[in-house]
Image 1 (tube, rainbow, N blue to C red):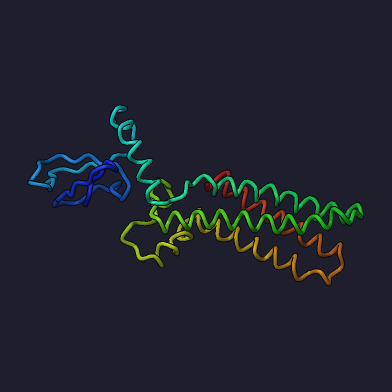
Image 2: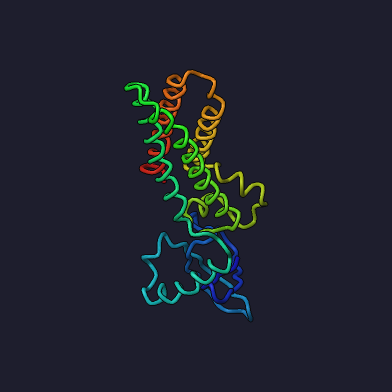
Length: 219
């Protein structure tokens, strides 16, 4: 395997069973000797977290890590949860206007449910796309990517790994639900206005459940 401080790379040769926590993007401690340009390790310890790293070493690595991430073109993962937060707010609007509008006979409120559905779909799709791009670019700064992918995976399997674990599968369900919601919004225009609004309102409540669960318990 290869060790890097994001500025230089050193190939490491080790014979033995690697620790369970050993994975791509994970810090390790290797004890051994240099053999030319190769490091021959006698012992490899995987670090549980960066608390075991001296602060001065962590500080020296950070600029190289930032430069490596910038050079890779990998997006910052922050837009994904922010997009999902906006989707959750729009789901709340969809549920409120879709159910309250028919209850009080307010046609403007009923009409407001459809744009909320479209906005919710856009932001859930953006959240899913950012996570998929992180898998494609091998952005191991995202814990979910580091736990469920590696750089040796073919592109197809990297993409399918997006929903291969708990959090990603829930996000895929949220995306599917938002896609069904926008389909209802588009193809229900011939239905009675109050009926269509109530359907969208109920779908909004279901979306609130999925998106809230992802954000607060499976982010």
